[in-house]
Image (tube, rainbow, N blue to C red; front, side, top):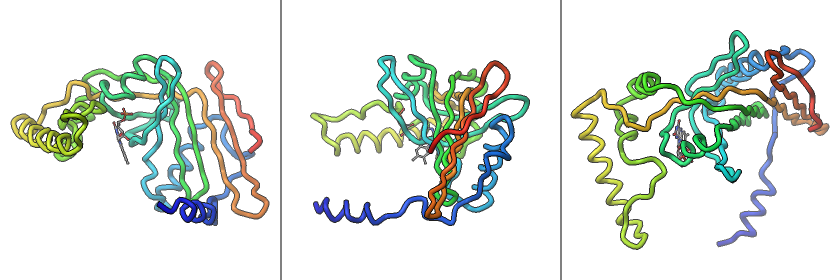
Length: 233
Ligand SMILES: Cc1cc2nc3c(=O)[nH]c(=O)nc-3n(C[C@H](O)[C@H](O)[C@H](O)COP(=O)(O)O)c2cc1C
């Protein structure tokens, strides 16, 4: 493995190359919702790939963090809300971590615009009715995937054999197809819709010019209002 060549390629790979989007923090609204909506709209309009894919970070009871990417399935930005909706299985690693420690962070990076958004807050799990609505709104292949096996659990295998595990995976898929064919309205027990109620947010706008005049605007919720501060980049 030629790691030196790989390092060389990394050093030669630009970031925040531009042209990037414009942002004047002096014109941002006093609360973060309009800015999130503006930046997401621009990402969608300009064809930024998969702008709804975000990183969710959680931590276990001991504070050990873990992260993974998820789909943003909805949000509420009106009437003071700054809520982000995602769905997963409560028995997954993230599900266990959220039960032990209901705080999490979300992060988006939209490279074509040089924009990063991070939010953090408390996560609540919605009721079974919300889980059913979310799951039954999915395509059949997505529902089959939801029944394939217990998310984040290890597949059975003799002495860690990956080919055993792969066979178990194929069997799990076949079982999942049967479950969904027998009952198209079946919903996995652990399927859960979560809402992250953000109480902090930060908007980072990269600058591609030689000045590297990056801008960071942070919002923190205090009671029912938001405080805005610029941060040194
Ligand atoms: C583009 C993309 C979108 C994903 N969306 C979701 C999602 O919406 N919900 C989910 O539970 N996992 C989603 N996953 C899988 C997660 O990244 C992760 O593998 C899974 O949730 C298990 O994470 P955990 O073991 O940390 O709980 C997605 C993966 C990718 C690559």
